Length: 250
Ligand SMILES: Nc1ncnc2c1ncn2[C@@H]1O[C@H](COP(=O)(O)OP(=O)(O)OP(=O)(O)O)[C@@H](O)[C@H]1O
View 1 (cartoon, rainbow, N blue to C red):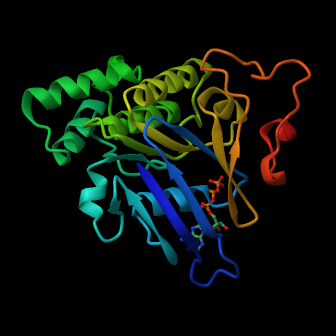
View 2: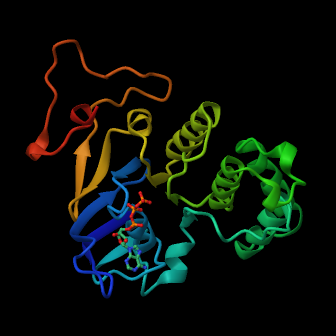
């Protein structure tokens, strides 16, 4: 679904690259968290993956389409939510905002109306359907961003800190939504500062550290409802390639 090959990123005037030689693949049906400290490069990576900025070197393909050279084709397979959220119209309601973005996905009339209502219900915003965006809390804005990313049910979701500002109930709701997405054959790559997201989401994650993007098995994936370790008592923690494991970080 998503293929990243030899990607490096240098911002002009910056003294050092954000990261170099990034290679990974996200197959269909996988959930991949991206961890990294402030300034590590998570947002930069997401912007490159969705084609908002071009990498200095390397290439990104979504469903086989290069995100720079075949951007329109690539974006048909893609739903995006970046952080901070700046692209909604402040004076429009949740419904009006989603209907506008639905039209950009070629959804009009009754199908747009139905999908907009379903997605507001899905992210728990039905009661705010008629609320202006500027009157939403930060967590509600984040959930509206997720609803917009889901418009048209694109197979790949790229989400920047989707659990930031969410309460526990809505973090659980987010994990249920992405688990359903994966069950339906979709893939999700999302950045987070919350290691709980890694335990709940997946079997492997990406960690950006010192200009390297490292893929690491989580080994603690136990499904959405569990907070357990996923290991038998006494079972050793595997540390492939000497990489930092989630357990070490706790
Ligand atoms: N437009 C830009 N021009 C120059 N440098 C930039 C630009 N955008 C980001 N950077 C730098 O690139 C590095 C990575 O930033 P980025 O926002 O991708 O990090 P992040 O991991 O998302 O951080 P956070 O967790 O704080 O959101 C930082 O050093 C940042 O200062």
